[in-house]
Image (tube, rainbow, N blue to C red; front, side, top):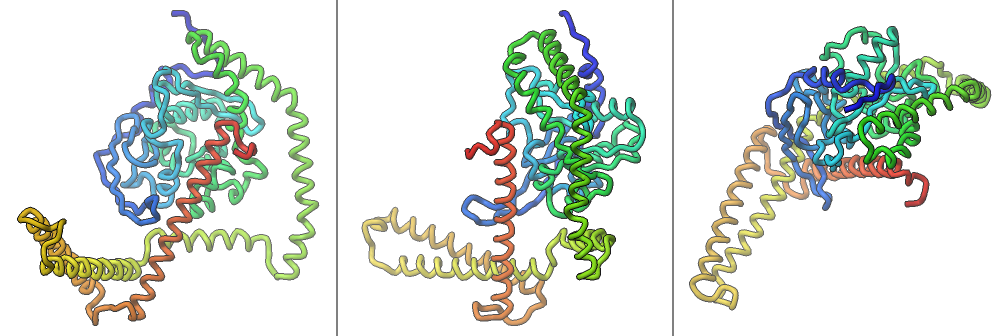
Length: 425
């Protein structure tokens, strides 16, 4: 079969060389609290299986990244679990009827396409960015700042790979996509807080895709030779257009920077004089916020126990009320629903099941009381019980707020990919 050679697209053999870069993990289970549609909390157990190419079963996870043992830490794992772009292929509904399911590109800050590779019958596996990054590091050595949707977690995958010469790389997340990451991650990886990022938003690839997406209708049913030929021609035209407007691009950025300095310079000068603060205080505040958030990776144990105890008491009281109701049914004369031996047996079976449930709830209450150090049993008027219920309501509210935020960001991404942003849809 005739093949087309392109300076823009990596050969598949070069990409496949990174298919086994990250060692596979054994099966793991991870516990996490999720919000159900009705607003109730549920502790979900997600089983994760990683193959050589990092295909993981479960909720949103990083491809080829370890969830424990030094892989993805507690901060970045929150980001990648919410990141739809790294979901398992079955969750994303990948169009497996196409051999080439997409392209992975790397662009410079001026918009030029550095290199690309085909994503072959799969989602966004780690071998694609690894292959692209290896090529870029060979062609452009030295210090670099790289923006990637999950750069906060992917840098750990890179550290375990065979790619060298990336010790001076600063990883950031794109400005728009970065707001889907948790606050702790943003303080370290969002370009707004990273020294040296300047006005760059690291969303160049998204603007590139908005141009190349028009090529999909032409290449969808094309032969491999003509498909790659069309993509190569489009990339060349795209770079030619960028080169023609490069002077205006740099000049406009320079003017924008001067306007920002002129517009906000006096404001910050007045702020420094009135509030007696200095420019380095902003970095200090960011560091203090990051240190504070680092201590919030896990809820305080005493609060967790108090909430669990209050919930156990509520459940115990509810099952006691259910038990009393079933007990009263046993003493009632037969009705249409309980007439005959079959109805009596059903009532007795239900009563027995409720009775066992009461015992289980009471056992849990006693166990939690022992962990709390004993003391009198709480009631609805007890001060500790009222505080625990308030903590529980606050926790549910924050979980619902996080869930809402992730849905809003997910919706914005879907609108952007469908070219429906700012259309009122």
